[in-house]
Length: 398
Image 1 (cartoon, helix red, strand yellow):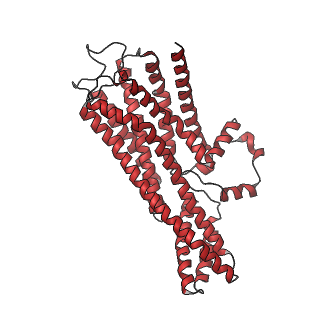
Image 2: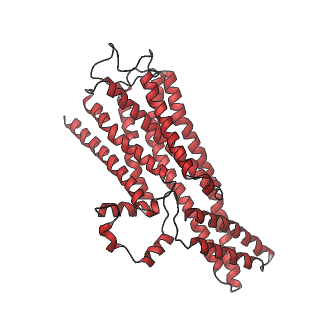
Protein backbone atom coordinates (compact mmCIF):
# COMPACT_ATOMS: atom_id res chain seq x y z
CA UNK A 1 0.00 0.00 0.00
CA UNK A 2 2.88 2.39 0.69
CA UNK A 3 4.42 1.79 -2.71
CA UNK A 4 1.03 2.27 -4.37
CA UNK A 5 0.51 5.54 -2.48
CA UNK A 6 3.95 6.81 -3.49
CA UNK A 7 3.32 5.84 -7.09
CA UNK A 8 -0.03 7.65 -6.99
CA UNK A 9 1.58 10.83 -5.66
CA UNK A 10 4.30 10.67 -8.32
CA UNK A 11 1.83 10.15 -11.17
CA UNK A 12 -0.43 12.92 -9.83
CA UNK A 13 2.48 15.36 -9.75
CA UNK A 14 3.41 14.41 -13.31
CA UNK A 15 -0.17 14.97 -14.50
CA UNK A 16 -0.39 18.30 -12.68
CA UNK A 17 2.94 19.42 -14.13
CA UNK A 18 1.85 18.42 -17.63
CA UNK A 19 -1.41 20.36 -17.45
CA UNK A 20 -0.06 23.49 -15.75
CA UNK A 21 3.11 23.64 -17.85
CA UNK A 22 1.34 23.46 -21.20
CA UNK A 23 -1.34 25.92 -20.12
CA UNK A 24 1.54 28.25 -19.24
CA UNK A 25 3.06 27.79 -22.72
CA UNK A 26 -0.22 28.69 -24.43
CA UNK A 27 -0.72 31.75 -22.23
CA UNK A 28 2.89 32.84 -22.74
CA UNK A 29 2.57 32.79 -26.53
CA UNK A 30 -0.78 34.60 -26.44
CA UNK A 31 0.23 37.24 -23.88
CA UNK A 32 3.80 38.02 -24.96
CA UNK A 33 4.23 40.19 -28.04
CA UNK A 34 7.69 38.74 -28.71
CA UNK A 35 6.25 35.23 -28.80
CA UNK A 36 3.30 36.03 -31.06
CA UNK A 37 4.39 35.01 -34.54
CA UNK A 38 3.17 32.74 -37.28
CA UNK A 39 5.50 29.81 -36.85
CA UNK A 40 4.99 29.67 -33.08
CA UNK A 41 1.55 28.27 -33.96
CA UNK A 42 3.30 24.90 -34.18
CA UNK A 43 4.54 25.32 -30.62
CA UNK A 44 1.00 26.10 -29.47
CA UNK A 45 -0.28 23.06 -31.36
CA UNK A 46 2.29 20.88 -29.61
CA UNK A 47 1.35 22.39 -26.24
CA UNK A 48 -2.36 21.79 -26.91
CA UNK A 49 -1.56 18.18 -27.78
CA UNK A 50 0.31 17.70 -24.51
CA UNK A 51 -2.46 19.50 -22.60
CA UNK A 52 -5.13 17.20 -24.02
CA UNK A 53 -2.94 14.24 -23.14
CA UNK A 54 -2.78 15.45 -19.54
CA UNK A 55 -6.53 16.00 -19.35
CA UNK A 56 -8.00 13.08 -21.33
CA UNK A 57 -5.42 10.29 -21.17
CA UNK A 58 -3.06 10.49 -18.21
CA UNK A 59 -5.70 10.31 -15.42
CA UNK A 60 -7.07 7.06 -16.86
CA UNK A 61 -3.60 5.67 -17.47
CA UNK A 62 -2.85 6.37 -13.81
CA UNK A 63 -6.05 4.57 -12.86
CA UNK A 64 -4.95 1.49 -14.78
CA UNK A 65 -1.43 1.65 -13.34
CA UNK A 66 -2.66 1.90 -9.75
CA UNK A 67 -5.66 -0.46 -9.70
CA UNK A 68 -5.14 -2.67 -12.77
CA UNK A 69 -8.90 -2.47 -13.33
CA UNK A 70 -11.14 -0.51 -15.70
CA UNK A 71 -14.58 0.36 -14.26
CA UNK A 72 -15.70 2.67 -17.10
CA UNK A 73 -16.84 0.15 -19.70
CA UNK A 74 -15.49 -1.06 -23.07
CA UNK A 75 -16.74 1.89 -25.17
CA UNK A 76 -14.91 4.50 -23.13
CA UNK A 77 -11.88 2.19 -22.97
CA UNK A 78 -11.60 2.16 -26.76
CA UNK A 79 -12.10 5.94 -26.83
CA UNK A 80 -9.30 6.36 -24.27
CA UNK A 81 -6.89 4.17 -26.26
CA UNK A 82 -7.78 5.97 -29.50
CA UNK A 83 -7.12 9.35 -27.88
CA UNK A 84 -3.78 8.09 -26.60
CA UNK A 85 -2.70 6.96 -30.09
CA UNK A 86 -4.04 10.13 -31.73
CA UNK A 87 -2.26 12.56 -29.42
CA UNK A 88 1.03 10.69 -29.67
CA UNK A 89 0.79 10.73 -33.47
CA UNK A 90 -0.10 14.44 -33.45
CA UNK A 91 3.01 15.20 -31.36
CA UNK A 92 5.27 13.34 -33.78
CA UNK A 93 3.80 14.97 -36.89
CA UNK A 94 3.90 18.43 -35.27
CA UNK A 95 7.59 17.99 -34.53
CA UNK A 96 8.06 16.93 -38.14
CA UNK A 97 6.43 20.15 -39.38
CA UNK A 98 8.63 22.15 -37.01
CA UNK A 99 11.76 20.53 -38.41
CA UNK A 100 10.58 21.26 -41.97
CA UNK A 101 9.91 24.88 -41.00
CA UNK A 102 13.43 25.22 -39.59
CA UNK A 103 14.88 23.60 -42.69
CA UNK A 104 13.15 26.12 -44.94
CA UNK A 105 14.18 29.03 -42.72
CA UNK A 106 17.87 28.08 -42.87
CA UNK A 107 18.18 26.79 -46.43
CA UNK A 108 15.85 29.29 -48.16
CA UNK A 109 15.99 32.52 -46.13
CA UNK A 110 15.07 34.76 -49.08
CA UNK A 111 12.00 32.73 -50.04
CA UNK A 112 10.92 31.75 -46.52
CA UNK A 113 8.54 34.67 -45.95
CA UNK A 114 6.76 33.98 -49.25
CA UNK A 115 6.54 30.22 -48.63
CA UNK A 116 5.42 30.09 -44.98
CA UNK A 117 2.08 31.90 -45.20
CA UNK A 118 -0.79 31.86 -42.67
CA UNK A 119 -3.06 29.68 -44.82
CA UNK A 120 -0.26 27.17 -45.36
CA UNK A 121 0.41 26.96 -41.62
CA UNK A 122 -3.31 26.36 -41.04
CA UNK A 123 -3.38 23.67 -43.73
CA UNK A 124 -0.35 21.97 -42.17
CA UNK A 125 -1.92 21.95 -38.70
CA UNK A 126 -5.27 20.69 -40.00
CA UNK A 127 -3.47 17.95 -41.95
CA UNK A 128 -1.55 16.87 -38.84
CA UNK A 129 -4.73 16.48 -36.79
CA UNK A 130 -6.65 14.82 -39.65
CA UNK A 131 -3.95 12.18 -40.19
CA UNK A 132 -3.66 11.62 -36.44
CA UNK A 133 -7.41 11.13 -36.18
CA UNK A 134 -7.47 8.73 -39.12
CA UNK A 135 -4.66 6.46 -37.91
CA UNK A 136 -6.03 6.21 -34.36
CA UNK A 137 -9.82 6.06 -34.18
CA UNK A 138 -10.45 4.34 -37.51
CA UNK A 139 -8.31 1.18 -36.99
CA UNK A 140 -9.31 0.70 -33.35
CA UNK A 141 -13.03 1.27 -33.90
CA UNK A 142 -12.99 -1.03 -36.97
CA UNK A 143 -11.03 -3.81 -35.27
CA UNK A 144 -8.05 -3.65 -37.62
CA UNK A 145 -5.60 -3.94 -34.72
CA UNK A 146 -6.81 -7.27 -33.34
CA UNK A 147 -5.77 -10.77 -34.32
CA UNK A 148 -9.29 -12.06 -35.02
CA UNK A 149 -10.54 -8.84 -36.66
CA UNK A 150 -13.15 -7.97 -34.01
CA UNK A 151 -13.31 -4.73 -32.05
CA UNK A 152 -11.23 -5.01 -28.91
CA UNK A 153 -12.86 -5.10 -25.43
CA UNK A 154 -16.23 -6.03 -26.93
CA UNK A 155 -18.15 -9.27 -27.32
CA UNK A 156 -18.94 -12.05 -24.88
CA UNK A 157 -15.32 -13.25 -24.74
CA UNK A 158 -14.02 -9.86 -23.51
CA UNK A 159 -12.88 -9.83 -19.89
CA UNK A 160 -14.87 -7.65 -17.52
CA UNK A 161 -13.25 -4.62 -15.83
CA UNK A 162 -10.30 -4.75 -18.21
CA UNK A 163 -9.04 -2.36 -20.87
CA UNK A 164 -6.88 -4.19 -23.40
CA UNK A 165 -4.97 -2.73 -26.32
CA UNK A 166 -4.68 -5.68 -28.69
CA UNK A 167 -1.98 -5.79 -31.38
CA UNK A 168 -1.37 -7.67 -34.60
CA UNK A 169 1.58 -7.58 -36.97
CA UNK A 170 0.10 -5.55 -39.88
CA UNK A 171 -1.28 -2.85 -37.59
CA UNK A 172 1.87 -2.48 -35.50
CA UNK A 173 4.27 -2.43 -38.44
CA UNK A 174 2.14 0.02 -40.42
CA UNK A 175 1.42 2.32 -37.48
CA UNK A 176 4.95 2.43 -36.09
CA UNK A 177 6.55 2.82 -39.51
CA UNK A 178 4.28 5.61 -40.78
CA UNK A 179 3.80 7.54 -37.53
CA UNK A 180 7.19 7.20 -35.84
CA UNK A 181 10.13 5.66 -37.68
CA UNK A 182 9.72 7.44 -41.04
CA UNK A 183 9.02 10.86 -39.44
CA UNK A 184 11.97 10.28 -37.13
CA UNK A 185 14.27 9.59 -40.07
CA UNK A 186 12.96 12.71 -41.85
CA UNK A 187 13.58 14.87 -38.77
CA UNK A 188 17.11 13.52 -38.34
CA UNK A 189 17.90 14.20 -42.00
CA UNK A 190 16.59 17.78 -41.90
CA UNK A 191 18.55 18.61 -38.76
CA UNK A 192 21.73 17.09 -40.16
CA UNK A 193 21.33 19.37 -43.18
CA UNK A 194 20.62 22.34 -40.92
CA UNK A 195 23.68 21.57 -38.82
CA UNK A 196 25.87 21.36 -41.91
CA UNK A 197 24.63 24.70 -43.23
CA UNK A 198 24.90 26.34 -39.82
CA UNK A 199 28.53 25.31 -39.46
CA UNK A 200 29.36 26.63 -42.93
CA UNK A 201 27.66 29.95 -42.18
CA UNK A 202 29.49 30.29 -38.87
CA UNK A 203 32.85 29.65 -40.51
CA UNK A 204 32.19 32.23 -43.23
CA UNK A 205 31.11 34.87 -40.74
CA UNK A 206 34.11 34.29 -38.49
CA UNK A 207 36.53 34.36 -41.43
CA UNK A 208 35.03 37.56 -42.88
CA UNK A 209 34.74 39.60 -39.70
CA UNK A 210 38.46 40.26 -38.94
CA UNK A 211 39.24 41.23 -42.57
CA UNK A 212 36.45 43.78 -42.75
CA UNK A 213 37.17 45.36 -39.39
CA UNK A 214 40.93 45.61 -40.06
CA UNK A 215 40.46 47.17 -43.50
CA UNK A 216 38.24 49.96 -42.30
CA UNK A 217 40.24 50.65 -39.17
CA UNK A 218 43.42 51.07 -41.22
CA UNK A 219 41.72 53.51 -43.59
CA UNK A 220 40.09 55.40 -40.72
CA UNK A 221 36.69 54.73 -42.20
CA UNK A 222 33.50 54.80 -40.16
CA UNK A 223 32.70 51.66 -38.19
CA UNK A 224 29.73 50.78 -40.40
CA UNK A 225 31.25 47.46 -41.44
CA UNK A 226 31.83 46.48 -37.84
CA UNK A 227 28.20 47.21 -37.01
CA UNK A 228 26.99 45.39 -40.10
CA UNK A 229 29.05 42.26 -39.44
CA UNK A 230 27.85 42.33 -35.84
CA UNK A 231 24.27 42.42 -37.09
CA UNK A 232 25.00 39.57 -39.49
CA UNK A 233 26.55 37.56 -36.68
CA UNK A 234 23.56 38.26 -34.42
CA UNK A 235 21.12 37.08 -37.08
CA UNK A 236 23.12 33.89 -37.68
CA UNK A 237 23.30 33.22 -33.95
CA UNK A 238 19.57 33.82 -33.72
CA UNK A 239 18.81 31.16 -36.31
CA UNK A 240 21.29 28.76 -34.72
CA UNK A 241 19.82 29.23 -31.23
CA UNK A 242 16.29 28.61 -32.51
CA UNK A 243 17.49 25.52 -34.36
CA UNK A 244 19.40 24.19 -31.35
CA UNK A 245 16.40 24.79 -29.08
CA UNK A 246 14.08 22.84 -31.34
CA UNK A 247 16.69 20.13 -31.84
CA UNK A 248 16.80 19.64 -28.06
CA UNK A 249 12.99 19.42 -27.96
CA UNK A 250 13.02 16.78 -30.69
CA UNK A 251 15.91 14.95 -29.04
CA UNK A 252 14.00 14.79 -25.76
CA UNK A 253 10.99 13.42 -27.61
CA UNK A 254 13.10 10.69 -29.21
CA UNK A 255 14.70 9.71 -25.90
CA UNK A 256 11.32 9.50 -24.20
CA UNK A 257 9.34 7.70 -26.91
CA UNK A 258 11.88 5.50 -28.71
CA UNK A 259 11.94 2.78 -25.97
CA UNK A 260 8.14 2.58 -26.11
CA UNK A 261 7.99 2.16 -29.87
CA UNK A 262 10.71 -0.48 -29.82
CA UNK A 263 8.77 -2.51 -27.25
CA UNK A 264 5.50 -1.74 -29.07
CA UNK A 265 6.94 -3.15 -32.30
CA UNK A 266 8.31 -6.26 -30.60
CA UNK A 267 5.01 -7.02 -28.82
CA UNK A 268 3.10 -6.44 -32.04
CA UNK A 269 5.27 -8.87 -33.98
CA UNK A 270 4.67 -11.39 -31.19
CA UNK A 271 0.92 -10.51 -31.36
CA UNK A 272 0.72 -10.12 -27.60
CA UNK A 273 -2.92 -10.12 -26.44
CA UNK A 274 -2.49 -7.48 -23.70
CA UNK A 275 0.70 -5.34 -23.55
CA UNK A 276 -0.33 -3.86 -20.18
CA UNK A 277 0.47 -7.21 -18.55
CA UNK A 278 4.15 -6.76 -19.51
CA UNK A 279 5.89 -4.91 -16.62
CA UNK A 280 8.27 -2.99 -18.88
CA UNK A 281 5.35 -1.70 -20.98
CA UNK A 282 4.03 0.58 -18.24
CA UNK A 283 7.52 1.92 -17.53
CA UNK A 284 8.32 2.90 -21.11
CA UNK A 285 4.77 4.21 -21.60
CA UNK A 286 5.08 6.63 -18.68
CA UNK A 287 8.55 7.59 -19.86
CA UNK A 288 6.89 8.73 -23.08
CA UNK A 289 4.17 10.54 -21.12
CA UNK A 290 6.86 12.42 -19.19
CA UNK A 291 7.88 14.14 -22.42
CA UNK A 292 4.65 16.16 -22.30
CA UNK A 293 5.70 17.64 -18.96
CA UNK A 294 9.28 18.14 -20.11
CA UNK A 295 8.60 20.37 -23.14
CA UNK A 296 7.50 23.52 -21.21
CA UNK A 297 10.59 23.19 -19.00
CA UNK A 298 12.83 22.97 -22.06
CA UNK A 299 11.29 26.11 -23.55
CA UNK A 300 12.01 28.07 -20.38
CA UNK A 301 15.50 26.64 -19.91
CA UNK A 302 16.64 27.30 -23.48
CA UNK A 303 14.84 30.51 -24.43
CA UNK A 304 14.96 33.84 -22.61
CA UNK A 305 11.68 35.11 -24.03
CA UNK A 306 9.79 32.13 -22.66
CA UNK A 307 11.48 32.60 -19.29
CA UNK A 308 10.44 36.24 -19.21
CA UNK A 309 6.87 35.38 -20.23
CA UNK A 310 6.70 32.66 -17.58
CA UNK A 311 7.94 35.07 -14.91
CA UNK A 312 5.40 37.75 -15.83
CA UNK A 313 2.54 35.25 -15.93
CA UNK A 314 3.46 33.73 -12.57
CA UNK A 315 3.95 37.09 -10.85
CA UNK A 316 0.80 38.80 -12.20
CA UNK A 317 -2.87 38.00 -11.80
CA UNK A 318 -3.74 38.80 -15.41
CA UNK A 319 -1.94 37.71 -18.59
CA UNK A 320 -2.13 41.28 -19.89
CA UNK A 321 0.00 42.45 -16.96
CA UNK A 322 -2.33 45.20 -15.76
CA UNK A 323 -0.83 45.10 -12.31
CA UNK A 324 2.78 45.03 -13.43
CA UNK A 325 3.15 48.07 -15.63
CA UNK A 326 5.02 49.92 -12.93
CA UNK A 327 7.69 47.21 -12.94
CA UNK A 328 8.47 47.62 -16.63
CA UNK A 329 11.75 49.36 -17.46
CA UNK A 330 11.95 52.60 -19.39
CA UNK A 331 11.26 52.60 -23.17
CA UNK A 332 14.98 53.06 -23.88
CA UNK A 333 15.96 50.02 -21.84
CA UNK A 334 13.12 48.01 -23.36
CA UNK A 335 14.21 48.88 -26.89
CA UNK A 336 17.81 47.97 -26.11
CA UNK A 337 16.77 44.64 -24.66
CA UNK A 338 14.59 43.88 -27.66
CA UNK A 339 17.56 44.56 -29.92
CA UNK A 340 20.19 42.67 -27.94
CA UNK A 341 18.38 39.85 -26.14
CA UNK A 342 17.71 36.37 -27.42
CA UNK A 343 14.94 36.07 -29.95
CA UNK A 344 11.91 33.90 -29.74
CA UNK A 345 11.88 30.19 -30.36
CA UNK A 346 10.95 30.36 -34.01
CA UNK A 347 10.79 34.04 -34.95
CA UNK A 348 12.93 37.07 -34.30
CA UNK A 349 11.17 40.33 -33.50
CA UNK A 350 13.35 43.42 -33.83
CA UNK A 351 12.64 47.13 -33.38
CA UNK A 352 10.60 48.87 -36.03
CA UNK A 353 13.67 50.74 -37.28
CA UNK A 354 15.47 47.60 -38.34
CA UNK A 355 14.56 47.87 -42.01
CA UNK A 356 15.74 51.44 -42.45
CA UNK A 357 18.90 50.96 -40.40
CA UNK A 358 20.02 47.81 -42.18
CA UNK A 359 19.14 49.20 -45.59
CA UNK A 360 21.24 52.30 -44.88
CA UNK A 361 24.17 50.15 -43.72
CA UNK A 362 23.92 48.02 -46.84
CA UNK A 363 23.91 51.14 -49.08
CA UNK A 364 26.93 52.64 -47.30
CA UNK A 365 28.79 49.37 -47.55
CA UNK A 366 28.15 49.15 -51.29
CA UNK A 367 29.50 52.69 -51.75
CA UNK A 368 32.66 51.92 -49.78
CA UNK A 369 33.20 48.59 -51.53
CA UNK A 370 33.46 50.37 -54.93
CA UNK A 371 36.47 52.34 -53.67
CA UNK A 372 38.49 49.49 -52.20
CA UNK A 373 41.05 47.14 -53.69
CA UNK A 374 40.22 43.82 -55.33
CA UNK A 375 40.92 41.78 -52.19
CA UNK A 376 38.89 44.05 -50.02
CA UNK A 377 36.08 44.07 -52.57
CA UNK A 378 35.90 40.28 -52.43
CA UNK A 379 35.56 40.35 -48.65
CA UNK A 380 32.99 43.15 -48.73
CA UNK A 381 30.92 41.38 -51.37
CA UNK A 382 30.73 38.40 -49.07
CA UNK A 383 29.47 40.60 -46.27
CA UNK A 384 27.07 42.31 -48.67
CA UNK A 385 25.68 38.91 -49.62
CA UNK A 386 25.22 38.03 -45.99
CA UNK A 387 23.77 41.46 -45.25
CA UNK A 388 21.21 41.00 -47.98
CA UNK A 389 20.10 37.85 -46.28
CA UNK A 390 20.10 39.78 -43.02
CA UNK A 391 17.90 42.51 -44.41
CA UNK A 392 15.44 40.07 -45.88
CA UNK A 393 15.48 38.00 -42.75
CA UNK A 394 14.78 40.99 -40.55
CA UNK A 395 12.07 42.23 -42.89
CA UNK A 396 10.50 38.85 -42.39
CA UNK A 397 10.93 39.10 -38.65
CA UNK A 398 9.63 42.64 -38.34
